[in-house]
Amino acid sequence: MERPRLLIVDDELSVRESLRMILKERYELRMAASGEAAIEILSGESVDVVLLDILMPGMDGLETLERISLVKPAPPVIMLTATKTVKTAVNAMKLGAFDYITKPFDIDELQLQIDRAVQSAALLHEVEALRHEVGRRYSFENIVGGSPKMQEVLKTVGMVAPLKTTVLITGESGTGKEVIAKAIHFNSPRSNQPLITLNCSAIPDNLLESELFGHERGAFTDAYAKKLGQFEHADQGTIFLDEIGEMNPATQAKILRVLEQGTFTRVGGAHAVQVDVRVIAATNRDLNQGMRDGTFRSDLYYRLNVVAIHLPPLRERPEDLSPLIRHFLGLKSRELGVAEKSFSSEALDCLMTYRWPGNVRELENVIERALV
Image 1 (cartoon, rainbow, N blue to C red):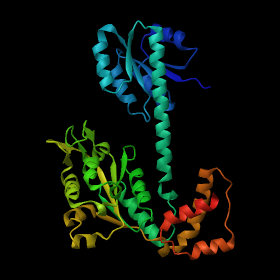
Image 2 (cartoon, rainbow, N blue to C red):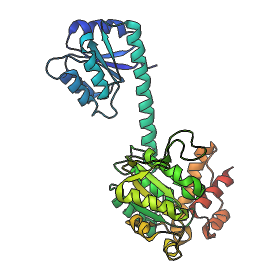
Image 3 (cartoon, rainbow, N blue to C red):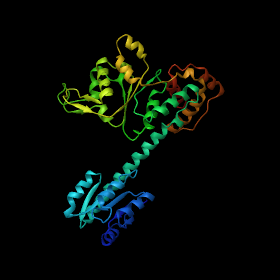
Image 4 (cartoon, rainbow, N blue to C red):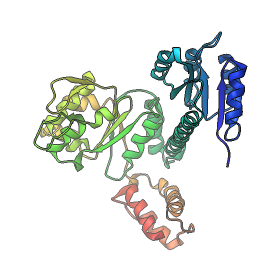
């Protein structure tokens, strides 16, 4: 098993040697006598944990810590400090240090701290790998759709993804509105921040406001504690409001306030909460008809409809059927752990001539059922 890699940064040779003798059996070590040397090492290789002295000539520990924090992903940093600089070490933790330990070192405490930091680094790497995989899955190249209509959709997604612009995605049920919302988020500068998905039609009207905006303790009968809403969880990221056409007009008014002012009030609260959230909404309803019959606010519609993306039904892009069938055959075979199969020409003819009222979702389910 590969040993964790530690970078020890201290201008005193005696300290570096003491740490080397203590830690050499359990860890792979790198040594640096200055902050500048540490940054040079980190520019060429990755380490799991950094042990960093605070008082050093030239670039001191705090400045080195700031430079290390710019490395992606940044390794956990344990500050090494004399007793008289403990206050500085606490300040270093406010700047992002993992922890600190005082000289002279307690060996058991030091190894415990390093092990905790190694576990934290492993978790960070795992999260980063998962995030990279999710981002790759929703890259434009992995969205199947070579038809002119889908190419136009992807062109719009590519233009709008880097911006904070509000997007309204329309289309029949099963056309892939959530996939497009995820593609916008994971190809945006917010890709490392939360993407919160909420199906407005799946939550009863009397609970939707609390789910979106949270509530204060005692706001209603079962509100035993304060609860943060999905807009707060999505702060700095994106919220995807699916089936927004099902939302009642009172809640629509609060969504409008978030879009216009970036603020809302929790249910039962008295103070405005400020958030920075990108809103992507989707609906399979005709919102123009909703405005005419009074079930959807026109002011919210115009706020949401800054950029409109319409997903065509599968029957209007038959040239995408064959690549989608191949895509789902491979994907579902891997997910189910079965050998990849192919359709007979007769079965393929049936698939190609069917109208697919449930669109891409129906096609995906049919192929999974056939493989099972």
